[in-house]
Image (tube, rainbow over all chains, first blue to last red; front, side, top):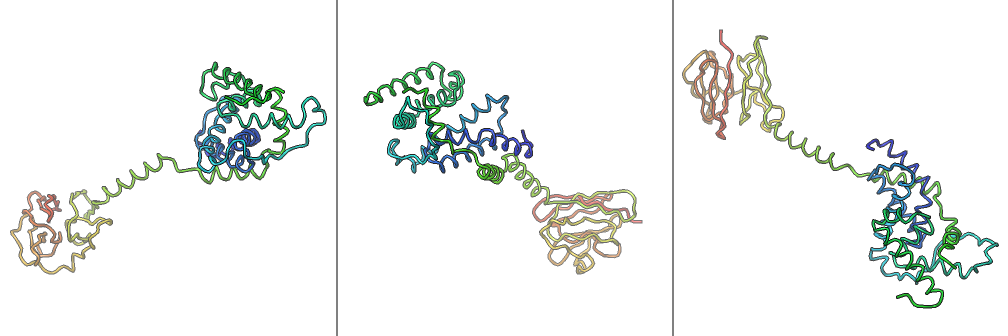
Length: 173
Length: 175
């Protein structure tokens, strides 16, 4: 699409429809609200410049997630971020109040699970977020990450194993 | 506790991390502000510039005093270009893009030497040794600017510019 007016409207719609999704996804990687906002800016600028032809909502969501993951990985690669170890940084997350009905899992356990996922190595984190948070099928995840579907399933399985080990107090391999 | 529980927990933890109108506006503004000029536009602009430079070296202007046939003289601009002179029978016009100052042909000093007349015109030389053409009255019709000139034959002549380029001045028939 080469029409600037069309581009502006399209980006407007994409920001409105997927902005929060992009922000949250960026937050899962960058663990800082301001960094997530900067990353969201970069995501939509890349999309604005590239002007991809997206057929449907499923493609749109998948595309946006792919760009977000790539932007976040670029951010994390930069020297400034390398100094921070994955576990050391606290979360700047704006938190809502916990639901009163969550008696099955304690707040501490909830925090543990949250910490665990966000501390996963990127290859597991990618698949876990896309599968468990975004509820995407493994075929779609494979397309987004440009990896074979069997690899997606293997990594999900290994992520579950790691969680089990973490709960049992075992160190990950 | 399972990975299936992550979604609810994550939603809760990021409940307030949403796209605000302010952030939305800022993103749109920056997208449009930082949109780069496309590569094809730069290439087109560079090509136009090059074409202008090349074609801007010589621009031929045709002036027909009798209002009749248009004889177009081909000439390469060298030193001492002449202006259009409405009293002259033949002209070689000056390009507006020429680097040399335009010469007022009427203000030129009289030729030092006038060659043989043919068809109403004669080659003529100035003090600096440059050649042009004069009419029957000894008035310059083509300002002295050439290293060598030939006599007019069939209303045409050959002139060699100081840089060696060859041009073909074209003349109007004298009555």
